[in-house]
Amino acid sequence: MTALDLFLPLAKVDLDRRLVTGVATAETPDRSGEIFDYVSSKPYFEKWSAEAAAASGGKSLGAVRAMHNSVAAGKLTDIAFDDDAKHVTVCAKIVDDDEWRKVQEGVYTGFSQGGRYVKRWADPDTGLIRYTAEPHEISLVDLPCIPDATFDVVKGGVIEKRGFASRGEATDPALDEDPDMGDDDCDADKGEFSSAEREKDAEEGVAMPDGSYPIRSAKDVENAVRDYYRSDKKPDVKAHIIARAKAIGAESALPDEWMATADKAAALSSLPGALRAPDALAKAAAALTHAAVKLDRATAENARLRKALDDLTPTLADMKKRVAALEAQPLPAKAALRALTKTADGGDETLVSADDAVKRLASLPAHERALALTKLSLANPAPPRF
Image (cartoon, rainbow, N blue to C red; front, side, top):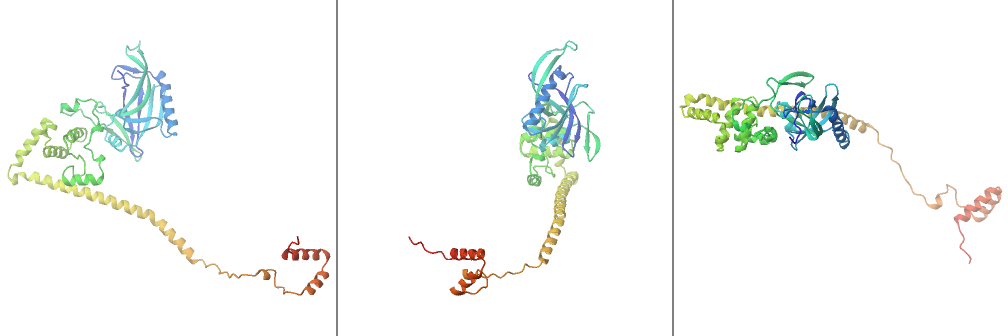
């Protein structure tokens, strides 16, 4: 064994905050007959989390991936070490929309640690192999859970129990040939397309009336069959998959028992119109469903626009009051400017003769006379004589 492979089920999912909580690893025998050694592995987990926190500026305490692939599903927001129980509990925030949908649907059932073995040795008490682990990431995985396994779902402060999705009831052996086949291969999912594309596919009959299960190729048929077994197994979904498989010539991608059912349906379609009333009703129901979906979308868009208008109304009212207040203020007084000549820039005194000026200077005290003569000389500088 070259990779860590300890699976532990999810415990709680917070739908409001996109948080998933569970035990990431524990000192318990795994599926390969090995035991995680908590004491020797704890320092490696602490170092890995501290390095992630330093690299992200404290925003992430560790990488969270999907199915041990390169998909960056989210990040750890909390990690706790229980020395008594000898397990590591984590809380992960899932930011990838596709991976979060799989968590909501109960497709992902647990955490699995990914990393490397630091060392391995025989455990004398159990006869199994004990190992020290150095983590590189924590992954969401979809290993089938035991029957009746559940997890807590929190929404709006209310906690409810939900069951995990199961693929154990699939009857097509091809579905179980590849153990690494995961939901990230599932292309028949409406979340991967824009709302306009989903609506277009629904109108053209490529997808269901709500835009789900778009099928254009044999691979899409295989993915849709697998997703059908993991979901609610609705009859209309099965009928859509069969119809699309026939339309694109990919009947070989359908399970054998599905083809038998399709043959019976084809036989019924050859009956007179009065005997094919259920088929007409089914088409009418599909059309009504499609119309209801479009109405729901229009209602949601209308509600969004109303909310945006309500949010802007107080701001607009405040701006209107401010404009009215500005308009009510009086205009500033107008100022008149006039230019003065240098000769007039000394006051309103009239020009005097030289004799009068001498007499006036003689009548001044000594210090005032000196100041007046200084000003006069500065105002009328004499040209140099050399």
